Image (cartoon, rainbow, N blue to C red):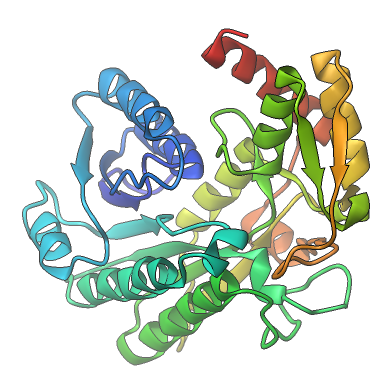
Length: 330
């Protein structure tokens, strides 16, 4: 683990950010967590995550509510930090492929402008060490080469969300080239697990099956996804955090996935099995912006970060359902 210091973590009230914060804080880091607690999904879930962080780590965790695209506010938070911010883990973003068709302006404001605001702060921070940020498997878009490799072309995005994430990668590389800001982009593949987002398939399916409501199954179930358990994703983020890139252009991009493309119907069957209840299927066509399959090649992350996912979907779904029953009292 790197020397303990102040770390700025954006999206701290979010699904992945909450889990990353716990690992950093347990390791003794001082964490400044930023989140605007967007109403994109149930804010009660976000505040419940924050409550755990605030009550468990009252001396080393500071929460700041605000918008990363608000430049004066971010500058104030940065300059007023008790300890210099030498590292950033930037996970805040407007997520969701389908929602980008409804509210495109929010994606550009948060995902592009917010990213730039943070890079500019890092640029002017003396002795800044590492800018780790979330990209997405969505950048592979219409790529038909399976599994997806970092060496594949990514100029055919299928949705605006993917465009914003690719923009973040390009911006970060530019800052690494111009200002030597070490940056690492992490392309996440379908993250799931306890405390997950209510707009994700596992959460939606669990809730609707328990309620006896039909579940939407897109492309008539002919979908495959590289489902990656949240603990494995967090392990990859921390590994990247501890290994800043070097060289003339200190910037790297890695896939973080489970390296296994699972049929959607098997995923649903495992949820049914864990709940002890059959789903009612509402078969629907492919949604605009979606892709039929995602599958990660994690060779580079394995070699350079020691990344090694350990949780299969059988265990991961079991863990999620146990959390869901406990949290909602089902």
